[in-house]
Amino acid sequence: MIQVPESILKRNEQRQDDLQKKKDEGPSQAEVFRDTFKSQQIKIESLIESLELIKDRNKLAEVFNQISKDLNVLNRYLATSSMFLIPYDIKICKGILQTLQDKSTELEHKLLPKKKFGFSSRKDIKKGVKKLEEVQTNETPELILSVQCGFSDHIGKKLVLTHVEVDNKDVGLARLEKCDVVINGAPNTIHLVNIRACRILCGPVVTSVLIEDCKDSVLAFACQQLRVHNTISSDFYIHVTTKAIIEDSSRLRFAPYNYSYENIDLHYKQTGLKREINNWDNVDDFNWLVNNQHSPNWCILPENERIQLI
Image (cartoon, rainbow, N blue to C red; front, side, top):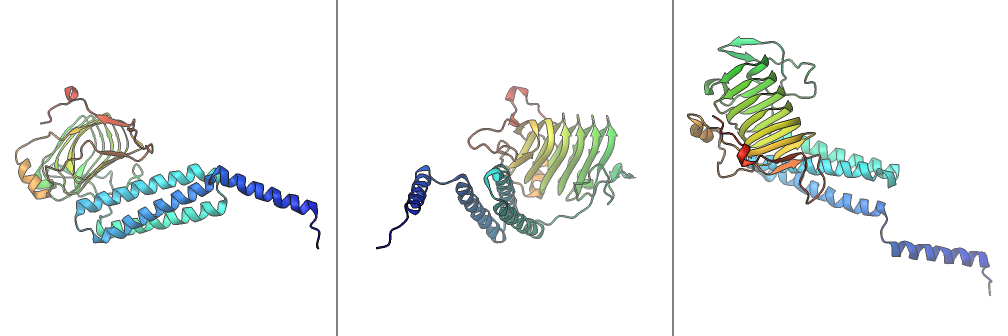
């Protein structure tokens, strides 16, 4: 009979004790991360696979918003978990996230195509409208916008666009301060960049409103989709058929859209927006990841502080 050395027996007992201890302690942080990451990956992949089956633009925009939010959350989860992950796992997860992002971006360009133009400092005055040419300035290097008419570089002005000038066009407003802007028509999109202490009232918009770098302003829009980035201390009166999205923003207040003017009913019909669907108080904050707790970056505008916009 072969005699097993006592040292080997002790090592074996130690391994068994270690295995039992790990079993008693439950899964490690890395194991929990891998399970959670995988389940979220499958969820996002399922959303991406559903996109080409969706025919309604409102629903498409809503699903793209959800994918963007889920990817943002998963990226942050990876970043906060990296301290207990090995470099190989981090690399694999980053690759998966990039692949999902690329697929989503490719489908968004295909299913919700947008033109690519940029704001310009050049001004071509025609019928009182300053055209924003297809030249991108250094002030908005990261924002590629589709712009056919609008205003830029004004302080303390009353600026008006009529339905003849904006219907089904891409409108841009850039570098405005203490201006009162009225857009009575049905533009295709609205893009705002670098807005300070302005009041901007707009009729129904066919698709989306994109706001970048706005401060101390009052804004009224009816649209399918509203995205707000890098904006502070502003009040929004909105009718939005998906969800409003905010990011890197704070001290924002929201109220239902109450802007009214002659022919607004006609412009609603032109855009196809459904008045009965309004998610004005359903706001997604991409910087707030705590479930079941309201984001501190936005709130409902109290009724006694709301103003009638005319």
